[in-house]
Amino acid sequence: MTTSGVLAILVIQAIIAAIAVPKAIDYFRAQKTKEAYHNLQQIFDLEVLHFTKMKAHPPLDGQVSFLALPHHPDVPKAQPQSIQFNKGAWTELGFVPDGPVLYSYSVETQGSNLLAEFTVRAQGDLDGDGKFSLFEITGRVNSEGRVEGRDTVFALDPLE
Image (cartoon, rainbow, N blue to C red):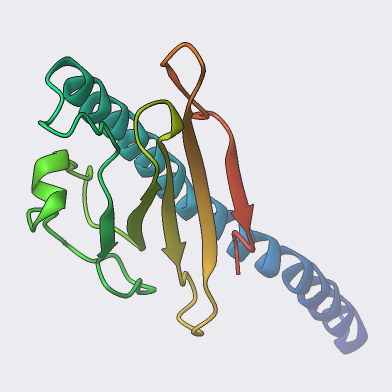
């Protein structure tokens, strides 16, 4: 094969690599976002269970609400972290991830009884550049006393 033939093959391979590598990186990042979706729904379900238990045995003041949870871990990292969710209110919720986590999870709440609502958040920094992706699910108690919203996930800059 001639030198120009070898160069042509190398140029073609470089073009293919320039197209394929970014697509592969995006694919692997997208695979990592599955953790956020799965854990958000698991935390959502545990919040609904907590609320249901509180309705069955309301506190003395009669205010049934969801459980507010601080960011845990405090800061997401580009590499998975082996974190125990066994501090404070996280223990009460009973959330146990399937393995190390890339995202920081939290729950913000407001209202009580039929006005109760909560937002489960996952923040991630998949490439370690300090820019965060954000995923949220908001649950609200409807007029019949059931919690809705589980399947609606808001995502902002998911592959950041």
